Image (tube, rainbow, N blue to C red; front, top):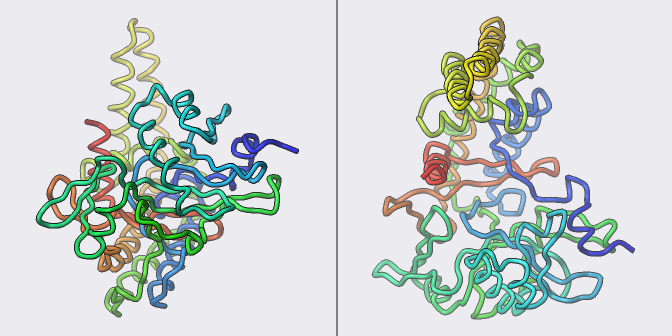
Length: 389
C-alpha cells in the first residue's frame, strides 16, 4: 500500500487545490475551453444568487495565511498538521512539535502558526478526514479596539463586533476550512471543494466559520440581472463570431504567459487591457531583459525577439482586440455578481490600511474546479502592490 506521504504528493492534478483563476482570465489562459468554463462558472453563480441559498458551491474568499492541511492520517489515525509543503516532492508532515521544528525551523513565523494548529485543532477536527483551510489568527495576532476585535492575517484587516467578537477574543486561533480530502482508501482519496464542516466540534479555543456565502442576505434586482446578461451576451457573441481568435492568440496564452502577466499589470495601473498596451508591455519587458545583458550582440538578439512578438501581434491585431474585448465583457459581468455578493460581508468588517473595503472576493465551484470572482480594482490591486513592496 502506498504511504500517506505518497498520496499527498502523487495524486492527479484534480486532487490538489492549486491556483484559482479569475473567471475572465480563463479564455486568455486556456482558449475556447477556458471560455466555456468561464461562462459556466458565471452562470452558475448568477443562478445561485437568484436562488437565495447557501452551500459550498459558492463561498467567500478569506484572506488568511498560511494555508494549512490537517486531520487524521487514514493509515495510522494520527493527527497531523502541514503547510502547503505537504504537496512537495519531499512532503513535510508534522505529528509532533519536534517534527515542526525539524521541518520548518528555517521559518519561525510558520513554526509558531503550526505549533498553535497542532495544539488546538484536535479540539474541533473530526476523528477522520483530511482538511485544508486558511489560518485567520493565532498567538498575539488579535487587537482589541473600540470597534471590536481585529486581526490582519495578510492584506485585509478583519474586525468582529458583539457576540462574534467575544468568541474570537477567547479563541487561541481561528481557521476557515475550504477543502476536504476523502475516500475509502488512500488510492481513491480526492480533493473535494465541498467540505463537511458541520462535523467540526465547537471549542472556545478555536474559532471556525464556514466559507459558504448565504445569498439570502443579498438582493439581486432586475436591473443588475439585466446588466449581467448584457455583458454575457456580448462575450458570447464575440466567441461565436470570432472562433479563430483562440488559435491566433495562442502564442501568448497559458498560465504565466504574456497575456496573463499583462492583465496583472493593468490591474496595478488601472489600465483597460488593449492591444497597444500589450505591445508596450512586451517592449518594456524585453528592453529590461536586454539591458541586463553584457554584449551588444546579446542585447540585439533579445530585442529581435521582441520585434517578432510585435510583428506577430500587429498582423493578428483584430484577433487580440476581440479576445481582450471579450475579457472585458466577462469581467463586467463578474463585477455585477461581486457587487451583489458584497452586500453581505459574512459577519466581519473589512479594511485595508484603515480604509473600509469589501470582502476579498468569492469562489464558485463549477464542473469540479474553483473559479475566483474578485473585484480586481480593489483587492487584487492592493495585494499585487503589496507584493511588489
